[in-house]
Image (cartoon, rainbow, N blue to C red; front, side):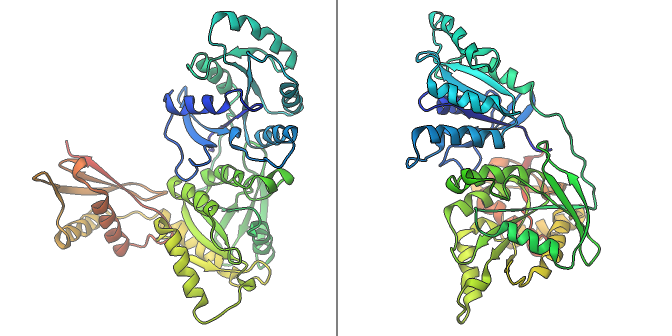
Length: 436
């Protein structure tokens, strides 16, 4: 099931980013920042009381052209839309301000649980001043110090009480997929075109804890699919038109439940940094990936236009060299009929299991072609390998010392495995482990 999401909201200069960094940096069982989105510092993954969760720092919003109160309102609206629990940060030094009341009124009207944190309560004298914050009507205020980490455990304890407990059961034969990407690349148009052309709608089912609706359909070959209707697929008002980077965190819920991710690119606008961020998260999550270049009908065609565009995509997405590329048009439905078969193929590849005997033959042949590296006089020895899981296919290679397995040699072994088995569209993981 998707991890719960906590959003940190509040007016500027109350210490939201300090608290975010404290949670991420102090390792209250917190894991590292998600690759690809660290520049914006808006998203990290963490763990508290054996429960993984996502953390959003709304302090990264940059809407300098908007009036000050509009910026605060945008932060609160985004948090309400995306989070399961909200940590509302205020400051004991300034007391309850008009801007605090503005945010509180927005949060009060929502159905999202709110934990009220009063920051900068570094000493006992200041903690006596937190009672004024009861006037915000959001329950008990928790005194904390983001700079020193005081009280954060109590806040996370309270937030964990509101984590959703709904579980999901996914059918083995069903392939779950979603479309992700920047706003206005044509995701919604692709969805409508796919569902409207030679598809049999089976049913609509509840998907996420937020009651988003997933859509089941059957392809011409008889394969059943569930298309995940995510917050990341569609804009929900002007907030998202003006804060494009939030398409990243909106896509993450989709990715967590997907077997296959369709990363949608805009042929007319080309590739942007935001595309790499979103695709990078899908890659790290181990989803099978298809690069879908939409609006191909809008591009003026010349000799080798498709080949040159594909080369550009490969150069920009070097880590996705395993992902197939398809050029489509939601408007003209060009090549859309090929998508279900392609999704099915990469979905099956993600579940492929390789017999250990065959796998070890491939590994030994690879070592014969390119001997293992040495470091300070010690040579890497590979004893045997086995596949331990699927989604994505994961291989454990038992060695004399895992520190001798250089990234480049691990990459070489991955390429040899890909040449021997059909893993198009899916990342594979290689884990070196010392033989005991």
